[in-house]
Length: 196
View 1 (cartoon, rainbow, N blue to C red):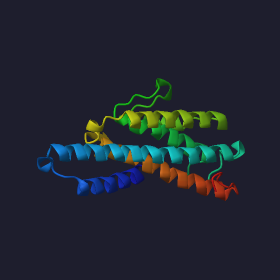
View 2 (view 1 turned 30 degrees about the vertical axis):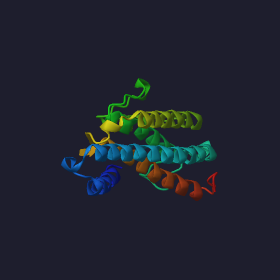
View 3 (view 1 turned 90 degrees about the horizontal axis):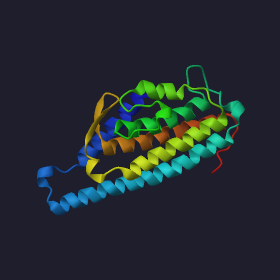
View 4 (view 1 turned 135 degrees about the horizontal axis):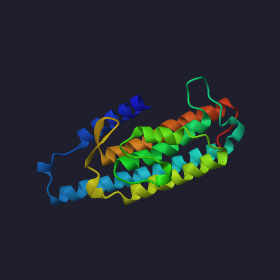
């Protein structure tokens, strides 16, 4: 995951850098416009997260519990492990920005190993779905509450400096990566995604 996250972060950084306007060139109205644009980006991301949430939860419910241990090959996450990985990173990325998740998760924003411990638990289907639902609620609330003024602030995640806005973009693209993975897992087991 680290290489994928780094790749996504580098692409996001390049795009945002290309679009950025030096602060010295921004007038009051330009700053207001930039703030409004950032706010719109977060709103757009929230809409996207909600759509991906519906699809991931739909797949989590459609896949039988007997298939939660299925994996396409040795050394690759199983269905249940992918779902818990999604839930773990839904907590981890906001936590890296200072949003403290429920202490029951054990996840700390400055320690990826806590997210790995969270996702390595052996849970049944119902408990996994409950964790997913709670994690999506946390992710969406922290995105909704993210102060626009802080979107340009830097944070270090996975050994890289990125802005808060880049972190929210990465949280969203990460969900799409694993949605695609879960669709492939479902189709490999002759399970039709509920929305198709």
